[in-house]
Amino acid sequence: MEFSLVNNKGMLIILSSPSGGGKSSVAKALLNADTNLSYSVSYTSRPPRGDEVNGKDYVFVSEEDFFIKIHEAAFYEWAKVHDNYYGTLRETVDKQLDSGKDVVLDLDVVGGLNIKKANPDAVLIYIVPPSFEVLEARLRNRQTDSEEEIQKRLTNAKSELNFVGKYDYAVLNLDLDETIVSIRRIIESERHSTKHIHMLSIDNNA
Image (cartoon, rainbow, N blue to C red; front, side):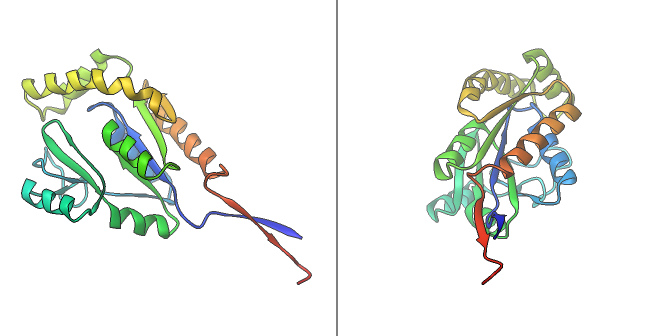
């Protein structure tokens, strides 16, 4: 008799960090390195920043259209962050999971914890910045936010870091390449977790 390990559905992988903490950069690197990962593009009511592309970085919609999606119960989760709305479309995520793909989402802590409530098997990974000084430098180097916006994001970061203990994993982002390696190891380990797989027996004599 032979045995086989099967995972018919993909798993949800949530990356969170304070704004400027590196979650988007990590997500892009993971997707480039792992063909079994897919990405769910979030909806947002905020305008595009810099060279962001609609449908690739975010789906940019008006607040009115965002509220319509809320009333239709179309979002897996949604939250108001930095005075703008963000949401994860349920239909998009479910299609990817049903196809066997592992889905990466980069979300704030509110969105991440809401996903965990809806899907307890979701894997939550918090990317921790080395210091507030480094975080501030990263925000300023983006050159996309006003001074008022930067200060707001730094204030929110102090609050968001209090939620690290509610996540499954925490990775200190001292070096981006090392952070990516650490998170890839976490994902590979979770793929072998009994939360995400089940065992089949095959009777060769049948």
